[in-house]
Figure 1 (tube, rainbow, N blue to C red):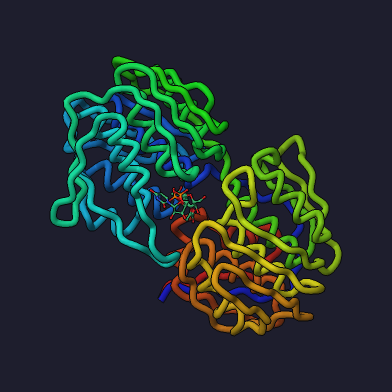
Figure 2: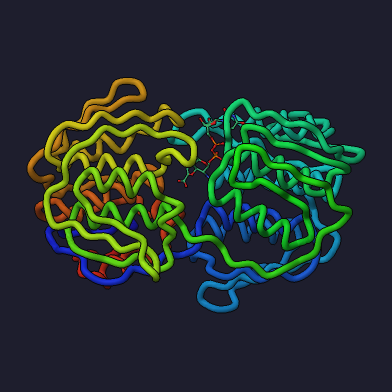
Length: 418
Ligand code: EPU
């Protein structure tokens, strides 16, 4: 049993360090398959998704190890086994991003087909289509995607939707393709720009990452480099939500306000004060939050990953908020757990109506996924009495030592693994 026990009612005061972004570092690690040599990544969070990606790279023949607290070294020679087995892909869907770079570097790749998850069905059709546009032949065999090519060629890729994963797979394949590739309707997340920065440092030629059109001039070969991971805007958002619910004043050290401007604006409308600070982001909340309506959109819109946190905030805010989830229709499972804490939330398809109650009451609750777990933890910080979160291994996938970070700013929180 892995549990986190939170006692609500303590204000948060102090500085919280923000680590490197999970959703960047996993892709940066995948990009190391593109060129042999020795890499060093700084600002890497110690989370289980990073450990699983490391295990996947090791299975292929790489050496991965921690150098300092948050520095990760990765090294390999020219011969890798371009395969991602089901045992690892099943644990972490993000493993699918090795497909594009392996195909580009080795001309073939076998990656287990990821299944659905707690958000519902998670198709990868756009990943596969964009690789086919670049000249890949893709077949499905015994639950695996088997991709091969006699040489990728630059192409005009038009994504139906700005999918983060599809943009990354196409980008990492195109960087070694012959000629020019354009990716239109590309995802614009800061993590995509971080990946492009790494690829350029490796000798790639990528222009426009962070906008809707990315142009890639294929390189003949790339080389291993050193890189610092962009800060995790979702981790930072989780601590903003914690301050919103518990009250207090914090500095989120290393966080980038410009990467989360719309969220900061929304939280401002709810009554928080948030501004960029020389060290990161400053945030204060001295009163009960006011409800607002929220809907998720691809970046720079409000990220789907913020939504469970926002719902936790609305659950005890003053008024009624209507919430719309436009990316993953099935992403409302945590609502039933919040209801166990006294929240008044009604869901209908991809909408939820959240009627704020005066105060949530602590209860035993179960984490279903990373962000849902973080949202329940946040709710517990404002609730009356004790909240006991179980299945907190989900939180461990994306949060580096959340208990220590919150406890250092005054939260009453402990972890029990027994
Ligand atoms: N989609 C398709 N076909 C595809 C790809 C995506 O229909 O080929 C759909 C998805 O079903 C979804 C939408 O497009 O409705 C967006 O999916 P996207 O591909 O952008 O998501 P992802 O790359 O699978 C990443 C993050 C998620 C985050 C989403 C959206 C990683 C490892 N994961 O997933 O983060 O919610 O982008 O921003 O980067 C998390 O960190 O907890 C997490 C789930």
